[in-house]
Length: 345
Image (cartoon, rainbow, N blue to C red; front, side):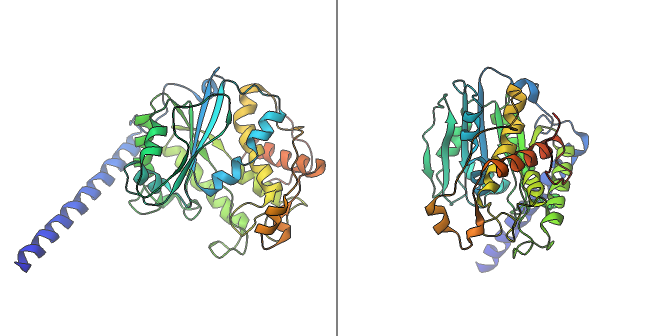
């Protein structure tokens, strides 16, 4: 009996491995031919999408998404942009990778996640709040809606190594995730969030340098865009942060509050400026340069961080530099430029 069970388990294991190998072979074939509708862009171009009368955005990510969009609604409001026909929603889960969200949709992920409306006059037919314990209904409900732009990104652990993105490991599943999203949202355009690097001395920074790790994140993004031209928009807030780190406003924690998450105030502000410049500047022609919204760190934020330098108020001078860092990043996310003068539009 034990021998029969052993043989059955071995046979099952071999079938699963063979199936996975075949799926990877099929994926490699599709990528090499560039013929899959799940890899190439949909019929709509990103410029057309961003200028639609109605713009419905879903940003699917993790805590880096929370950092990046924390102040975005305020900056959009300060730009006097009419948001009656706009909505911006987020799906966020701590440390979420492509695989995490793929598993979540099929009820295979047990971590809690959040579905929130961030700003805008439109309301989608979804129940916002916290989901968890394998409850896929929040994500499935969100993806049953019609979106104009969907934004994704890779978890920071694997963001610097594109070789892992198409594997069956925790850092993989990009192809399956993209295929799933494209099938569910055939009329949407897709954007990719280029995230920031860890600080120099953060324990998980294998490069030992924020610049080197950011450079590898840029290279991974470029490699992904070759294989996946469906991602027509890059939101380079990570490059904006790296530009800001090259300014006189950088500090010993590389504008983070713990080595990985962005510091309150200035760093989050620069990230939101990059979001704005990537999405709302093409839509309206109104640049983030000169935006009047400012931010002063709160007492609760000062209590949350171990080092007070993790909280940097955004006054007029700091806002000017952060805005330039974002504009430079959106002009060329591959360059690391110290923001010392106003960029030409």
